[in-house]
Image (tube, rainbow, N blue to C red; front, side, top):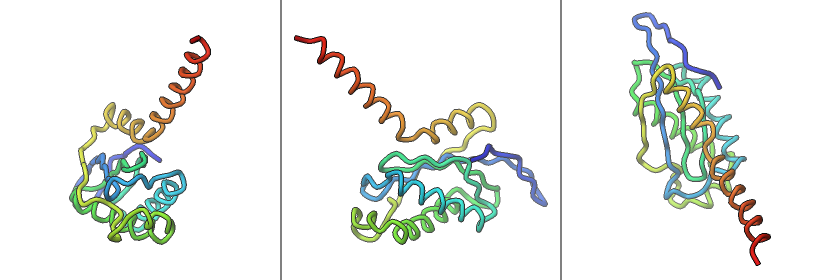
Length: 157
């Protein structure tokens, strides 16, 4: 994924980057590596179809997804989120039918979401790394605890 750029349109120049977080319905753990990869591919297709949505980074963490998205001032964050959520939900259910079994009621995402703007320089870099590493910190921490646990067990009588 890329860093944001200044977008030059006929009547404005902008650099609007949003950090969007969308939880899965009922906060179910549905984002394994397979589902995350399908989600990434679906988002790339969204990017091709909608010229006002550019994904800078996507990171899943078991029960929610962080999107770092650039857009233009012509579209509200709500419009962007609705587009992303509706297309990804429909496609994930088609491409990953096992997910539908974990959710009842036929909905993939919760109704709510989090959105914040991100600054062009240092904030974007920090948020990009945070989004990119979703779900990885916990696994590394668990591995560290397991390793530490084994050391402690060996040393204790």
